[in-house]
Length: 337
Image (cartoon, rainbow, N blue to C red; front, side, top):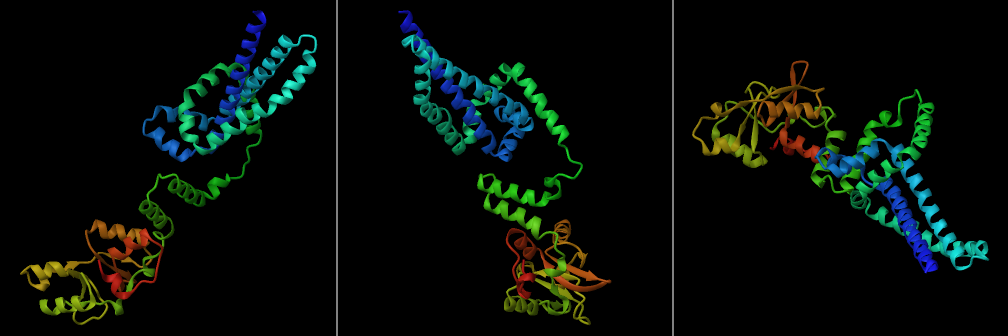
C-alpha cells in the first residue's frame, strides 16, 4: 500500500512538473510573440487583463525572472518524481534506474513540456496569455522572494549598460512608426483605408503644395464677366464640378470659384455665386493647404508666391493623394472636386 501511494505521488509530481514546464515555456514564447500594440490599445480601453500583461511588458525583468524560477521548479519536480518512482520500485538499483528513466522520459518532457506549448503560444499568443494572466501574476508573487535577487541583478546590468548615445528607436522614430503601422495592419488593428491615410500623412502630407497645383496659366477657368450659359457650357466640356474665376483683364489672377450645381439649379446671377478662394503660400505643405481649405469651407485654393497667383489646387486631389500613392496630376483632375 505504501508502494502504491508513493507511485501515485511520484506520478502526480511528474504531471505537475510537466504542466508547469509547459506553462512557463509557453508563456515565455507568447510574451515575446504577442502584439504589444494591440495589448496597449486593449489596456487603454480599460481591459483589466490586458493591463496586467502590460505591466509585465513595461517591467520585463520581473516576467523573465518569474519564468526562469518557474522552469527550474518544474525541472526539479519532474526529476524528483522520476527518482522517487525509481527508488520505490527498485530500491537496490535506484541510481541506475533513475538514469535510464530520465533518458527514456526526456523526449516526453521535451515534447509535452517545451515543444508543443511553445508552438501553441507562438500561434495564439494573445488569447493564451489572456487566459493565463492570473496564473502569471500568482506565480510572480509566489516566487518574488526567490526571483527578487535576479531582478536586482538584471536592473544593475541595465544601468551599467546605459549608453549616452540616443536610442536607435528615437533616431529612427519615423521608420519605427511605419513598422508599427505595418504590424497594426497585419494584426487587424488598421483597416486598409486607415493604413493608406496614415501612409499618406507620413509620406505625402509634408510635400510642398506646388507639386500638386495647376499652374496659373493652365487652369481651366472663366472670366467673372462670363454669362451663366457660358460657364455651364465650359464646365460640361471640361468635366468640372467647380470652375475657377479670374478678372477679365488677367489670365492668371484666380481669386474665386463657382459651383456648377449651384449655378445650374439656382436663379442667382453668376457674379453673385462666386466664392472667394483662400490663399496659401507655394511653400506650404499639402496638409496645411487642406486644413486651410477646410477652415474656409472652400473647394479650390489659390497658391501664391511673392504676392502673385502661381496656381490653383483642389481639395479633392489633396484628399486622393493622402489616401493613395502619388501619381501624375492632370490639369482637369486637379481642378475637380
